[in-house]
Image (cartoon, rainbow, N blue to C red; front, top):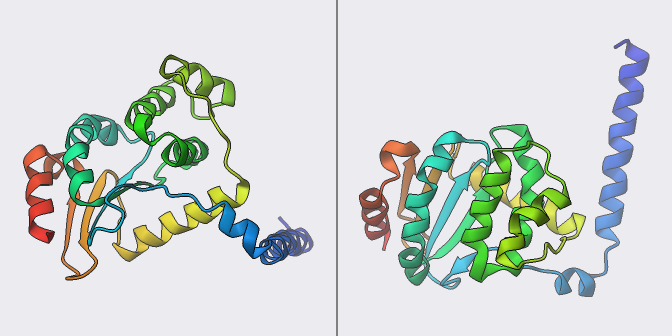
Length: 205
């Protein structure tokens, strides 16, 4: 790319960014408040927060998913639990809008829907709404699309959380006590076990 084309590309990027800023800044506060979603599970006011970082194409994430799923009923009784998309593979971001929709609207069936998303990820890197709808049809759930703003804001929050706890790999589980600041992190299949999860939770309570 020559200097002229590079300069044009930079201008285009800046223009798009400026447009997004104007759009977001001009969004009425009442409307912005009206579309706030809760993407977490369990005791949302608990001092203990648990962040489950995963990537939809991460083989170890798929391997430990049944362990995490089994632990969720206990974890949600004692803590605020958030499933965080940490894209290691770029195509994983194609699944984030669906994941967020199910976390916001289908909490009771979320784990089953999550399993369905992992199933779709084994078949395609760029799922269509039709692909997702077919996968979740047995669960009698309809996909409800979130706004562009909802998705991008939450993706930004996910990135900030990953930065806060210095998460660089998936799967990673972070246990954090907001009051005492105690933190315990489990990374990979060797650490994310039933016993490992139980001990980590107890260490920050």
